[in-house]
Length: 203
Image 1: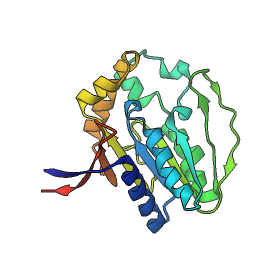
Image 2: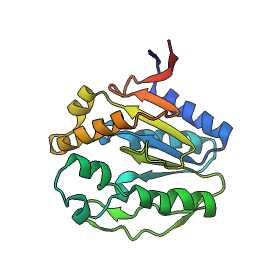
Image 3: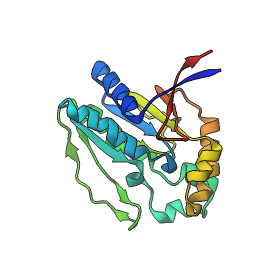
Image 4: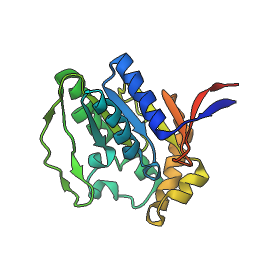
């Protein structure tokens, strides 16, 4: 059985930052459903690196959605949310690979609310920049992250914390988690974000 240890968000952020200091990793996934607010934790961990003087940047997966004509082609459908909502190949093409090879990255591709191109300009990364990518269903897609953090919500917590208007996404998120359990570097139970628990081993 997995063994979990209580931890605070601040301590978890420091744990992630310490691992990055030691490894020199650049690309970090913070995987979590919108209800887990993964961007908030990514921002907290990035702040730990900023305190050390190491540059850190954030990318929200919601800035790499596909146009609405493609996202909604089949309506609010489980398969469509899993495979057609977020542009994971573009994330790799425009962010992950160029940061590693050229020291550049695109901060946003598409504006979800206005359904228009973000018209963002490529940024030049400072030496040693760590880039946190936060959003749902990042794991299990063969993306080249150096470090992965999974903020896991139980089915009950995911259902409880997901707004009614987005309830149709819950089956897709649960199905993806079942089919791609993965082995994140840090697996965190996130049902109660004020008192998370970090998987530290097994009995």
